Image 1: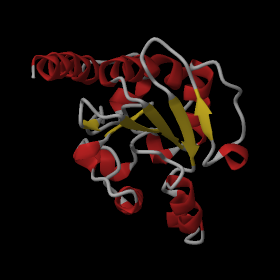
Image 2: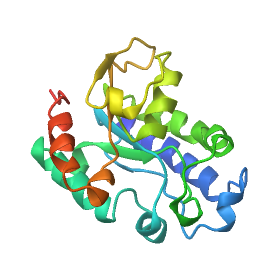
Image 3: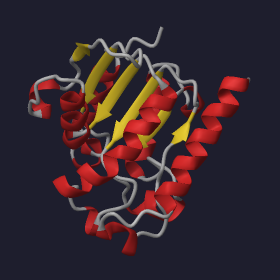
Image 4: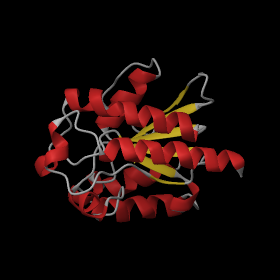
Length: 194
């Protein structure tokens, strides 16, 4: 109980930092920063790339069409959002949902790094190529194309206790290509939630 209260205090500090952040230009066009949401003691942490339109309006991760697919993927594992923690590399929506810029990732990833150190998950699942590239490099693994590594598990050893990193396509891929939903479901089955 004391540990959870300490984690909440630290996470609230990050929320305040993000709300007041002006390191890049994205703060000027956002409606709401999207810090992250979920179980602060989760063994499983999902990391996406950046908020989209619906996330920016609501201030929560994965609430649009891709969020519905994400929920279905979680259900396929017998999980709910309360069981996991989800965050993005960027906390503010890039205009017109463009890809995150390298400079934005460099400035904003500091907040994600702090979130990872608070949550201390056993497994990190990256959603999309930008999230995968950032996390793989952070843990000293070779960066690859998402098409080559989706569904693959990487074993890691670090002081945070993270044991595995699994790269996945972003759930939004199934909103553009419905055939990808089967690929996402197969890849999600590689997540060992025990």
